[in-house]
Length: 455
Ligand SMILES: Nc1nc2c(ncn2[C@@H]2O[C@H](COP(=O)(O)OP(=O)(O)OP(=O)(O)O)[C@@H](O)[C@H]2O)c(=O)[nH]1
Ligand SMILES: [Mg+2]
Image 1 (tube, rainbow, N blue to C red):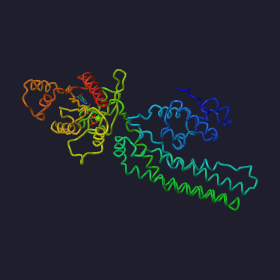
Image 2 (cartoon, helix red, strand yellow):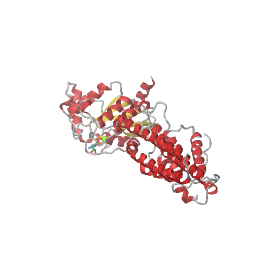
Image 3 (cartoon, rainbow, N blue to C red):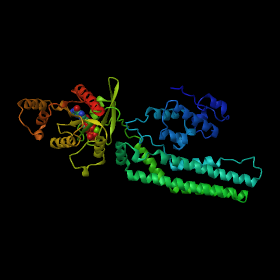
Image 4 (cartoon, rainbow, N blue to C red):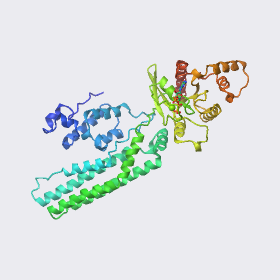
């Protein structure tokens, strides 16, 4: 790996190169005082910083390079700390060849419309006269045309960054495509991006038309009037279409926190009815910290946890609970669970709460299990009986039944179900019972899964 370049402008060299205003204070404030040359220098730095690590230019970094990531992400507006965070983030999650690349989580930063247009207008209006042009009318025409051009670019380039930086659903991993659809509805996503693109075209049209009118103005006064009208028209046109930008801000806010699953590493999905103790288990065995609460559907999206075995990272997903009903009646959260199982190569840990405190009857939990087992028959499957601290008597009774080897109806009671699932791990996150054994079972299941994947 090549040595990391130092960043001109974030270190001492900025003090030397920049005007007197560019002291330390200015670096940490929005850097609107920076000259274009210095901004370009920063962009070049980011490119070299990234390329010396052999990294790809991701949509997020592209947004930074283009200055299209909104006021916050634009290079000139970034504090050193923020830059490091963005750059390291980009480096920390390189696209994995077979894994999910995290395209949804790294969508560009979208600047709020008011902020974006006002900063574009401020920047463009700061463009001064070209003093080498001696004729005052020619000087004013030149200035007005350059202002219009700068305004157009300051508005349209970020819009272009959004249109290109938000991923095309057709090119996503099937799980990410399902995640996108279930999170923001693919139709809404496409419609919003379409509107942003139309807004970009309108902005280009307005900018070009005013720049050309300004350059053919017949007097200094006329050129100045055209520029003034151009600023107003651009603002009006942009704000008229700003609903699509607000919608895009909302979409980005929903996509960014989505879990970034990597299908290249062994993965386990915890599945079961709501409230049976899935998230408590994730907390007990992994780095994941999903919310645990005594009501159904506490977990409303796919949550991730990781754990290390012999130095290797394993991934575990907590999923929203499933109810015993037809797909047509299932809510978005249940569909998320089903698409994770459908599109990701996971082993399944099916959690049953034999106390029925979860609110789902034994019969319904059993039906859900049988349905999932039938649907995903090729997946490696482990059964877990949760809340073992409350089930000592039932387990003892169930063990006696197992020895008697009579045929039983698993739904007749907790003891019967326990006896029908002799290989299930009996665990309690309260007493810690069975957790270590279950972890061993999981590791062996994941290694079998890997062998299956490689075969
Ligand atoms: N006694 C006892 N209670 C438990 C145990 N594990 C979980 N619980 C309780 O069961 C309730 C549900 O736990 P969660 O981990 O949120 O269950 P979940 O399956 O993730 O629930 P959803 O996300 O709503 O589907 C909470 O009140 C937990 O405190 C356990 O081993 N013993
Ligand atoms: Mg949960």
